[in-house]
Image (cartoon, rainbow, N blue to C red; front, side, top):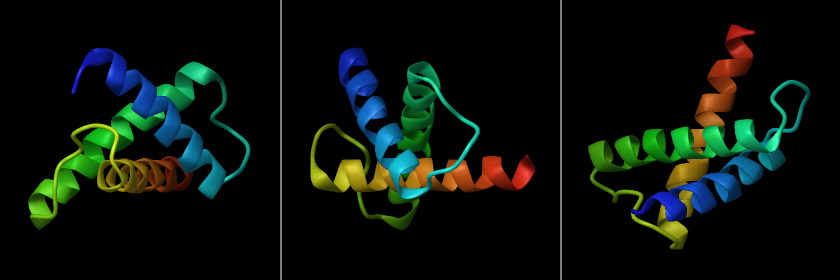
Length: 81
């Protein structure tokens, strides 16, 4: 997955994760983008370990895995703060 694709997917996934788990705290475009990119990495790792798939670009499975990873990251962040 290319750099620009990662940024766009990260923005989309970060926005979806914030929409699923609204709340105060994390804000700003850069933070949402980082959340989405990190979520894509976590979701890709989980998907690979379970033998489902990897985050490869703009398809529903990749977006779903990346969003799952971003939501997991948000849950962990909120538990720590």
